[in-house]
Image: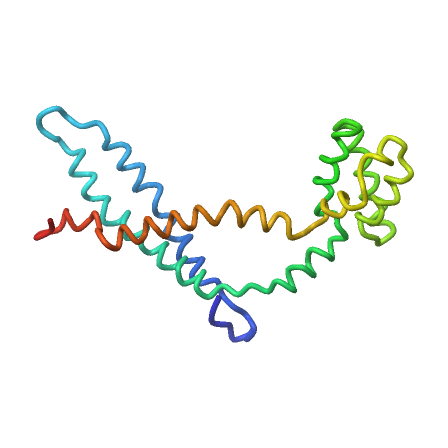
Length: 199
């Protein structure tokens, strides 16, 4: 964000995001026009390709505007890992309730696991505790689970970094492929062949 306001000098307006969203709002009707122009006459075009040409400029302008705005937004993105971790920790481990329920379901079934974790979640809030600690005690008190889920396995379910590592592993090859594709476009822009004097 950038800028401020006369009443709120601390304010940061999401100008780039607003620009990208505005461009996105203008795009669907242009795409709809291209779809409507898909039927083409066999010998002589009677309006469809002419309609396509009328939409291309606006469509490309919207796409370019959105990409330029998103480039600006992501270029100025500020990430505060410590603050993000504090926000996660403030949730008392409840954000991991689904992961806990899925693991417990392998031992006692989905329905019982759901009700068990639901009760633990309510207890966590009532005691202002952490779900991990409440679950650790409850595992020791539950005969069906006592020897089935270890303390280390339970701790792994509450590892806030695990989803980030998984997402990073999925994103890394996609980002590498995108970079390779972008390099290819820079070396040999396909749109140049449609310009006067192009190859």
